[in-house]
Amino acid sequence: MWSVGFGLGYLPYAPGTWGSFLAIPLAYWARAWPVWQVLCTWCVLCVFSCWTADQTAKRLKEKDPSCIVCDEVVGCWLPLMVIPWEWGWVSAAFILFRVFDITKLWPACVVDRRPEGWAIVLDDCIAGSYAALLCCVCVEVLVKH
Image (cartoon, rainbow, N blue to C red; front, top):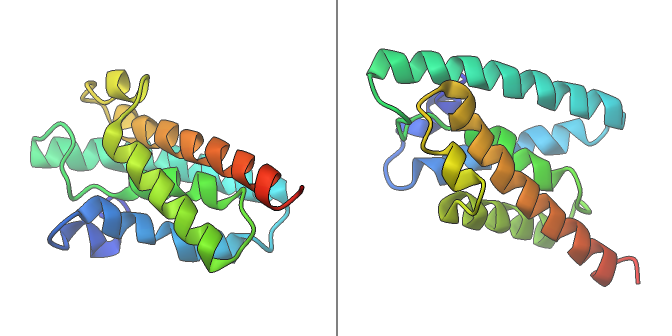
């Protein structure tokens, strides 16, 4: 159930985008936690996502089925961890993640060619890292100065 985002991965038209939306309430909920707890939870979800994505892909006999969206959840959560919690910033983090996820910049494009569950998740974590880095720069320039 987690691998398909509790059903969001079965929605028509851009299931990855629908799955990415699931990161928003999770990130909002986790904002009250200490940083170490957020990072530990994220790491556990990454490992669990690798396993469930692998199992679902094997069951469906596809390399990276579009219904698997747990990778979008953990990837999108990264930029949401580093922004001020305002809807403009949340929207920007979400959009940046989707752009980086769709464009698959290096090394995500290399990882994306692998058939294993860890690769399904890792390319989205790379996209999330790029989005988080850009969000950090924007916050530094626009908010802190």
